[in-house]
Image (cartoon, rainbow, N blue to C red; front, side):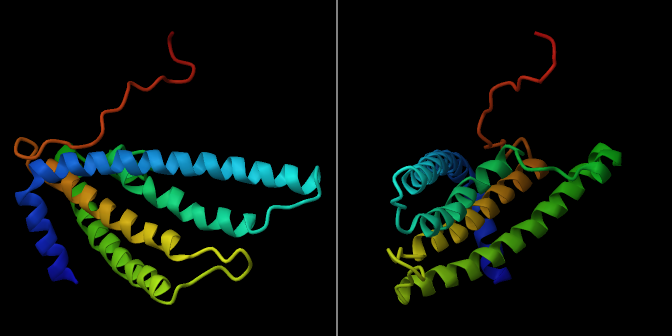
Length: 194
């Protein structure tokens, strides 16, 4: 497994000028898909509540359908969140370090995270493949297929591992490897000057 990850790192380092912008586009497409799915789930659950309590005709399989879409929502946006540092940061110790030490601590953390994400991607891929191979479905009608939701995990973990390696390359050699993170608009701070 470590050999495969190292080989992938070499390929990414060599092809970073092509892979970086491609990853950025894929992240934005998956993020858009995640948002659309989230809006659909909200409308679906809202419609189910109306159907159940107003018309006394609940939508069959609403709970299973919403549960299956939850990991898709999360893992399609996973790499984009890493790219934009949109996650909850635990930077207390890093903030106390000198800039050089902070950079190398971040590199070490990212490299460890790459291997962890690669392991999660591998095992979640095996699970998704098993669900597809066995034609896995939910336990109750309308018997939704489970493999599409399961497939979102290896996609999210693998893409996040690639994103983290691009971040490592940028931290180690910023002149050779620019930051391929999506451009974000300036944040508006609550209570700030207007």
